[in-house]
Length: 334
Image (cartoon, rainbow, N blue to C red; front, top):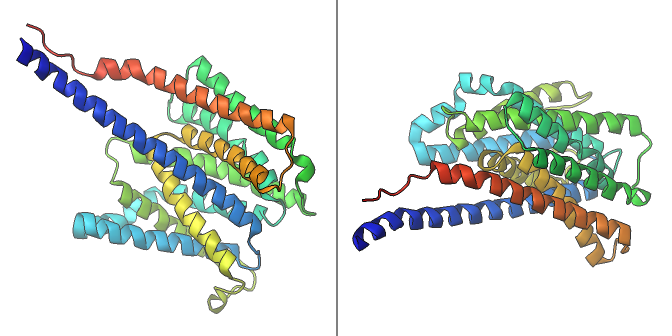
């Protein structure tokens, strides 16, 4: 009987260890993603804007494509490379690639009209839109409590940033900037949701293959947009580039890969909620550096965002626990 009990307990111990490693990996992924998201806004806000925006996105897609091809060749050989450059795979994901490219293009163009704080404010529309569209397009189900928390996080982020509006600088071409930010939100939400479906469908290709397919499609989309840039010539590709432009490029590459990992390992909604956390981190950094004065109302708003996000994570984990318990095989009893 003792041997039988120990044999029955062994799978449970292994399952608990595997679950712990998976949870630690996800926490590390979320933290890294938040840091990268912060760097995108900090670098984009401080970078010079003398470069052609499409050239940075073209370079980002090209470098990511090369990384994907090399990694696929190492892991799967010639078969992996063929899948990466397969025309059918690229065309199937081309709408998603084009949407991703256009969303980042609109965001970078918005920095010419607004600063990072105001773009973050309008970007909070992504969370409720992602939740609604994921329920409609992907059939994802949320409990009533989760819906309340999603909208609570959105309201808390919006109110928190609205309290800082006195320090936000809005450019003279606000209508153009507003169109850019709105387009960025819509393209990003749709592209994220459809890429989630591509990453998680039953017969999905390997992650590296899908990422390379997406970047090739984005490369094609940026090539088309460059053709419509007035006065652009290939020999002037790097005109206006400086060190800050290279930093923008680096953060965009990191954000594209980490966003894809977040969508694959977690979900689109979790990705957007993580972006909300970056709002609080940016505020904390500004307080620590002395660039932002301490205001009680803003501090309370930041605390509301953290608390609502923690509640959403707890509710999600509690909802997943019964399903995992039912799916786990029960030990045989004599």
